[in-house]
Structure formats: structure tokens, C-alpha cells
Image (tube, rainbow, N blue to C red; front, side, top):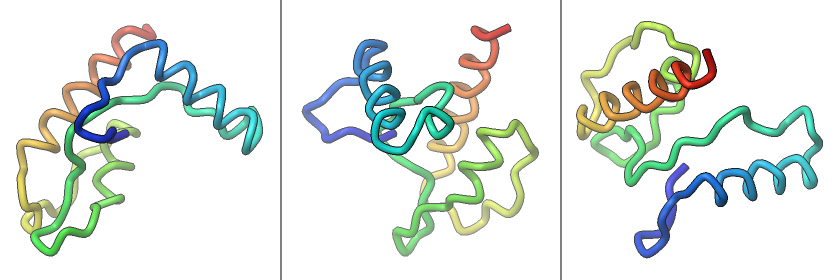
Length: 89
């Protein structure tokens, strides 16, 4: 999840957002965890690479990343996803 530049992510905000999704869309749609990030993986033309987000969330090997504008974003998201998964174990 990306926040506006002046906002900071916190566990309390993550809980509030998960509860909001549960109320508006139903408890089955409530995300297990949220990761706050400054940037999402985008192509050079600015499109969000949703496929990479799914791969990161599901712990799969990443496919083609040659069109990424900034590959450091993916590495950071993978690290955060791994950290979140480690907390749950």
C-alpha cells in the first residue's frame, strides 16, 4: 500500500484499513497483512506491474523484470513480504 507523502504507515493504521475493507467488502476480503511502501513496481511508462505484486505476495519466483523502471522497489517489497511471513511462523 502506498500512502501520500506526508502520511506514515503504522500497525494501528494497518489494522484500521483491514477493518475498513472487512466492513465495506466483507470479512473474506480482509487482507491478512498490509505492507506500506513509498513506491510500487512500475514499467518505464508508469504502469503498475500487478503480476510482480502477486508473485511477491505468493512467494513465487519473479518472471520478466526487464521493463521495470526501478528494480530496487521489487527487492524491498520481497524483503518486507519475507519479513511479514517470518512473523507469522
